[in-house]
Length: 266
Image (cartoon, rainbow, N blue to C red; front, side, top):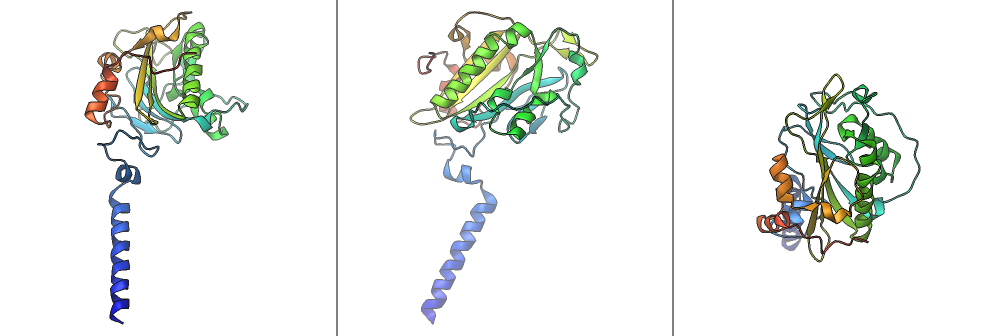
């Protein structure tokens, strides 16, 4: 009888420990501490927000900047199994109701000469209709010249999907460089960035690596690697800390590098 009581007590203690861990820690943080350079799919390495207006959607997150009427960054994970070629009917662009200060209206773009340029591309979210439609929120677009949007920027988006397939899983952060005195469009004065950036983190083994692109807002036939810069440079231009949750030594190394030798440019 005493042995049975001891066993029951031990089982109760184990359950108590499990529930404590469940209530106080996310499993991602419990299994992968910040001291490890392994990155779990359960951990989102979200950038900081200069506006403190972060919005989390099911398939991407963003930081909205009301002053410029667009997101300063959009961030999401892109895995090999998400790369699909499904053809969905394009929905209309709509306001993002989660943006407390209200996102810009699509009418700002009418006869402006600029496209509604996706930051999280619809082409990255073809694995479901819900995910695809979710990219047509006005918080996920920025004014882009047509030849830029369909030219060099489209090439970079395709390359990003190639890397997601090759490296199995990547984390992407994209936005325009927002600063005072930019050209604006529409009655809400939506700013037109002069440069766009894309930062890509490969969080698969054997090593974590990152690459950053800073692309002038005009079409170009130059090779994509000519636009490679350091994450530190983009942080200087935007005042955003892109990977604050990485271990400091790993973050410093990744963000200072301008090397693209570990990335496959076919």
